[in-house]
Structure formats: C-alpha cells, structure tokens
Length: 308
Ligand code: CP
Ligand code: NVA
Image (cartoon, rainbow, N blue to C red; front, top):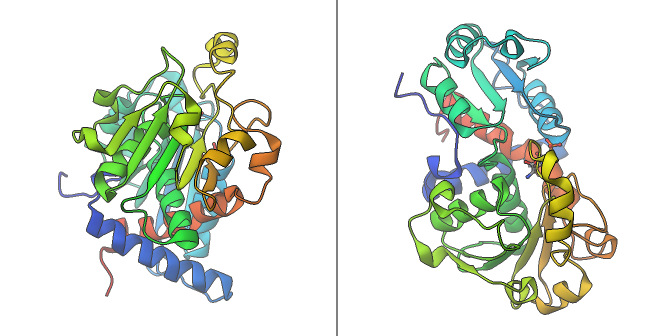
C-alpha cells in the first residue's frame, strides 16, 4: 500500500513534479477552452469518491465537473448521509470505499483523519481541505500566478490574516518552490511552524504590522477570519482581526503590478475591502476556475503517472 501516491500536503510533491503538473494543467485547460474532448478516465471508467465533512462550493464543483469532463464518474458522500456520521471508524471506511473507486478526495477536520484514511486506502487520496492544509487551493494559486506573472521562484507573497490551513500551505509551497512569504497575523493567531511543517526558516518572515508585510510584495493574499470548524470563536476573532483587512492602502504598499488572491468564499468589509477584491489587481475568479484545471492534472498524475 505504501507505493500509492497520495496528495495530503503540498510537500508531498517535489518542485520537478510541480513543474510537470503545472504544464499538464495548462495543456488540459487549453483543451477545455477549445471545447476539445479529453477523456483519459473513460475506458476503463475511473470513479472518484468525494467525502465532505465540511461545506464546499468550489471544491465540489471543480472535482465533480473535472472528473466528468475526463470521462470518469463521481460518488458524493457527506458525514450526514453516510456511516461516517454514525461513528464508523475512518480506517474501515477507507478499506471499503477504496475497494470500489479509483481515487478519493476528502474534506475533513483534523489532518490525522485523512492520514488514517490514506494509510488504509488501496487508492490515491487527495486532501480537499483539512484544519491544517489546503494543498489543491495553493496549487491553483501558483498556477494562476504563473499565468499572470510567470515563475514564482524568488518572489514575495504577503499573507495578511489568520495563521490557518491556507497560511500553512503557503509556507510549504514557499519551501518547495523557492519563494518567501511575509506573514502578518494578529497576536495569538500566528502560524505554528511545526504544524506548517517547514524546516527552512528563510522561506517566511513575520511582521506585526500587516502593511509592512505588504510592502514590496508581488502577491497579496488573505482568507476568512474564521475558518470552518472555528465558528465559536467568531466574535473574538472579529475584534482581534479588525486591522487585518486588505484594503487599497495596503495594496499601494505592494509592487505596482502586485496581484491580489483569495481562495473564497470572501467577506467584503472583513478580511478584504470590496475595492480590492473587485478591483483591477484581483485575480480571484481565475483562481477559482483554475482549481478545476489543476485538479484534473493532479488526478491524471495520481492515476496515470507521468505522461510523455
Ligand atoms: N476555496 C475553496 O476551497 O472553496 P470551497 O470551500 O467553496 O470549496
Ligand atoms: N480557511 C478556510 C478556507 C475555506 C476554503 C476554511 O478552512 O474554512
């Protein structure tokens, strides 16, 4: 079972594998835009099981539409409508589900749950978001950066906001792909670098003032103040994060051609102003669409390997 390739964290793939994947994603996107059929999962038919223990719009639509476009099939499970919600052990669920499908995508709470699932799965498992990481999103973000500005190596990404799953994954991406993240979080909401799982301290720099984190950045990015699963902290977070709203003043401190990204869903007037997310530097809609293209490339790679 150990030879199966999973995608549970961004650092599960190397820089060379990312170079290949990003190239494939561009190739697959081009076919999609040209209305050209590309169905490597049609014969034999491949099935994706998607397990959602948290809400989703983009992850569900991008995986489901992507799999159908590639000629495969999809099974959709949630906690509420499966035995997962009635305490069937995750290991047993993995043993059963992975005998019937070819690949599994999971969105859940603790990373440990997806790690346990993967350890007992006969097929590749993809992380569709956990409390700790969101690798598919950062893969789409890097692809989007490449489309607009080319290679991200050596660039500066400003992270303004919560030290959450997105922030952890940006740090891993910086370590794997060779760029720097300028992190500014309110006190008490910083990144735990042990959880982020980065060894190279040169890949990130922390700033008390979010404006200083944005100064000279090539890309400014943020996320909701309260992630799924942390709703009980909503009020405390609203107060703590009040100064961590990416607005036009912050964007003016970044490079003149800096991009703005947000994984979405967004709360205008909280972590980002309407002027910024709906403004000329924002690439959030491309980011969302690119989830589908990069995930098609990812599923192709995990199921069919490196194609020539
Ligand atoms: N960005 C993202 O993962 O969106 P959803 O929660 O809608 O899937
Ligand atoms: N950090 C957010 C991302 C949502 C896509 C969350 O975990 O809810």
